Structures are given as structure tokens and as C-alpha cells.
Image (cartoon, rainbow, N blue to C red):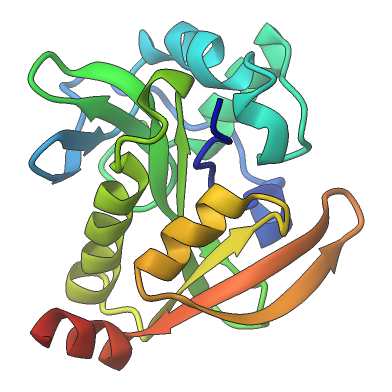
Length: 207
């Protein structure tokens, strides 16, 4: 079985651990972006158990994400409530679904990140096992870059990845992101930092 195309982001490293639980909205979840096959939307209460079953409780999926181990149900619920967007924000982790039925297949999103000592955003994606190897990471990655550069006016975007996570590294390189440096986090070990500048992205789109 192929390794998962996991999140380029390490949320706790990027200063998220002091955030408070987000209020849960009862409205229809905000659609953040859409691609030919995918919809990225804000989270809803009903998503929590599904995300745990598909992602946070799966040891294979969590191998390269966060602490590298599956989360217990309570820990996963707390994490989702703290770090996912349940409201109207275009940034933060959000629920990734597949058209046409809207079935949840993972999560993704643009997250604040100070890995390089600046107020950057990083792209991230964590996918359920059943969609590995289908080009989903590249598709959602391209859409996140467009969101960051076109709507959020970012000067650059980052991607953080475990050095052993070859599929995610391949996905970031396919998106045009280049390796910049390796950082060390005492809780998660080594993380390779990839970057793409806004002008680099525009040039690639023009080609």
C-alpha cells in the first residue's frame, strides 16, 4: 500500500496550541473552495466522528501527521474543535469532500505558520486511505495555492513535511514548491520546509 499523502503542515509547531475551541455554527457550512472533483468546506458538528474514524483514529494515515500516532476519540474531538474552522473563515483546517455526494475524504486548509520567523501561511492536506494515489493531493494543493495568492494576497506559501514522507514531498514538488530548509521541532522531530513565491506561482500558471 502506498504511503499517505499527508499534511504539509504541522499545526502545533506553527503556534496553534494556544487557540481556544471554536464555536460550532448551525448554519450551512461555508464552501471555501471547489475543484472539479472536490469541495473544501467549513466543519460541522456531524463531521467530528467521521473525521476521527477516517483520519485521526487511523494509524496508517497518522503516520507522518502531527505526533505520528492515532488520537483517541476525545483527543481528536478536542483537536477538531480547536483547530478547524466552523465559521466563515477562509483559513484554518477544513473538511475535504468528494463530489457529487459530498462524502468526506480528509481535510485540508491554509494555516498560519511562523516556521521561517514570519507571518506566513502553509498549505496542508490529510487524506483518507481510500483516496490515496488518485491525484487528490495535487488537485487540492493547486486550489490552496490559488486561494492563498489570489484571495489572501500572500507573498509566499509554505509546505512542511516529514523528511520520510516521500509521497507528500513529491506532491509539493509537483506543485512547484522548492525545498528551502529543514527545521527541528522537539515534539515532532525534523520537518522539511518547502516554499513557493507568488511570482513563481504566476509564472508557472502562465506557462
